[in-house]
Image 1: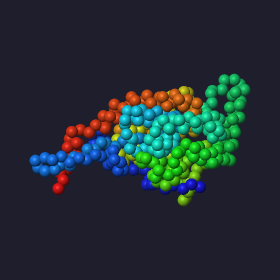
Image 2: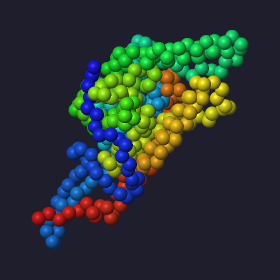
Image 3: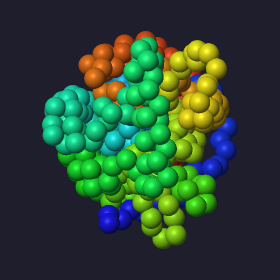
Image 4: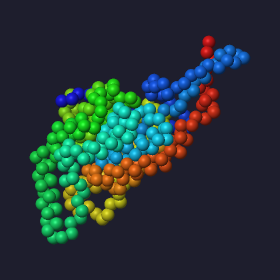
Amino acid sequence: MRSGHPGDGCSRSYRERSPGRTGQSVGSHSHDRENRTVETIEGPIEIVKSRRTIGLSLGGGGARGAAHIGVLKAFREAGIPVDRIAGTSIGAIVGAMYAATLDPQFVEDRFRAFLQSDIFHQLGTEALQKDRDPDSFLEQIAKKVQDRLVIMMALSRTSVIKRQRLERVIDYLLPVQTFAELKIPLDVMVTDLVSGNNLCYQSGNLVEAVIQSSSIPGFVPPTSSNGKLLVDGGVGVPNPVPELRHKVDIVVAVDIARRNRWEGEPEQILDIISRTEAITSRHLNDLLLQQADVVIRPEVLGLHWSEFGHFDQLVENGYRAGREALTSVQKHMTVSWWNRLLFWRKTA
């Protein structure tokens, strides 16, 4: 089993920051700060020219995560720097691919190749796509049989697929193996089913961390490690905005959650359970997003997480939403003259 190093729990609370407030810079990248000394009557003054750091919070959503790629393309094209990424599930996958390369085109091309590969088809996600409503009598009978099979399988197994299939997926997609090889910092979120806590990987084995963050409960088995049972970070933190709040100045969240309007009342046990879980997740997601400075919501077509057949459209929708958010992001990046004055410090 691969091993990673979870960081501190992510259950802190953070204050929302206004566009004019500066915060802690991330890392020591040369583009974060540029100093120069100016001679004045009173002596040399060192002017510290600093820009506000940006963190991108990429939420979970399976196939809908293709929209993340479009947002990254829009930012890259506009010259908007991303200093740090926090990701959950598909957000962790896309975030890791981008943090390793800083090239959204690589991420898009690699994902497209993956969707055409045997590794993808062996996942069997097609069988999980939302069924259309049964019309004929035979279709109604078939659905009842299918529901019974799902219940029987749920009572006898911990997952639909074995962990090794997800391992092959992540090995294929990620161009590096460890956090140390990334070009910008990355936070990968997982949830512990034993304690209920959210954990954050920031160092060590990147591939293992992303596998755990992408282990959708019921579809992929949980990972047992040091008394913990680790699953998809979306269980406890569908959008990891709080993890970035104290690490960067500006938090931009990309929300790819389904926001479908439910039609009618749930009729069967599975429908009721599914509806209940969806409502809880939606309210949690909205609470997390309130802590972001900018929230980008691409049109994700109401797709189920397993519907990967709309990749190009989702990338385009993400790109369009990213472009529309540029003005708001740039507004937060602008430092007022008063804050610029605070950056000056007199040298000895």
